[in-house]
Image 1 (cartoon, rainbow, N blue to C red):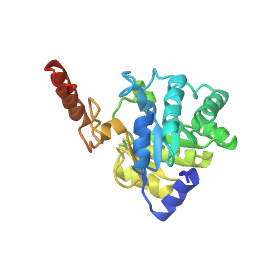
Image 2 (cartoon, rainbow, N blue to C red):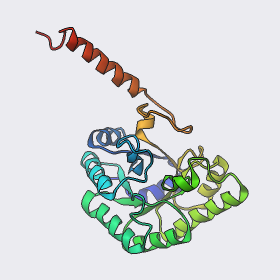
Image 3 (cartoon, rainbow, N blue to C red):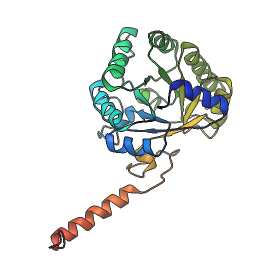
Amino acid sequence: MSVTTHQLIQWKQQGRSIVALTGYDYAIAQLIDQAGVDLILVGDSLAMPILGYETTLPLTLDEMLHHAKAVRRGVKQALIVVDLPFLTYQESVQQAMHSAGRVLKETGAQAVKLEGGYPAMAATISQLTSAGIPVMGHVGLTPQSVHQLGYKKQGKTVEAGERILQEAIALQEAGAFAVVLEHIPADLADRITQKLTIPTIGIGAGPHCDGQVLVTSDLLGLSEKQPPFAKAYANLRSTITQAVKDYSLEVREGKFPDL
């Protein structure tokens, strides 16, 4: 049985931590699914480590759909959530409905994720969930607002922390089944997690969230530059580089292929 949005909420109630990673292609999605990850986020972080953009902003909906379909083909168990890219949902509820509908219809993913918790976004999420589209929220550092916020930690003042808390509550009331808390103080993430009945998924938000998500290329040591809150559990950059050097040397010395 595949993981469902309802299971995530039950796991919060049971105190079972939720394991999430990003996935962008068939091969990696298949591996992390078989390893037992609960949730695979086809994140708009796809833009940087996979497509080589400077930020997430240039990413198109068609690019997201292409990669989400590949992920879907590799996954048997995990819940698949797909980010809606910048300016594919902010203009109007109708635009958001169209974009989210395409994700569910064309990729087979079970949910979408939207950034921001301000009133207009909560209203959009309310409309989407009323139409039967499961939505994950995202507050704190929102990368699609990079030119406004930068990549610095959010919610460090009392006022900013209260605003993020109220945004998370608004997303829950709008019908979101979970909310990502990105790059905020651990004590603030703890407060939000205690306040909400839906699960919080942290990234750079400390140990008190109901689950954690990392960009898989960061976890595998493939990224050129690691964010301060990420942890590399392998160094595949070095492994791959050495493997290619060994292969190149054997070809040039006539050792590969063997006679």
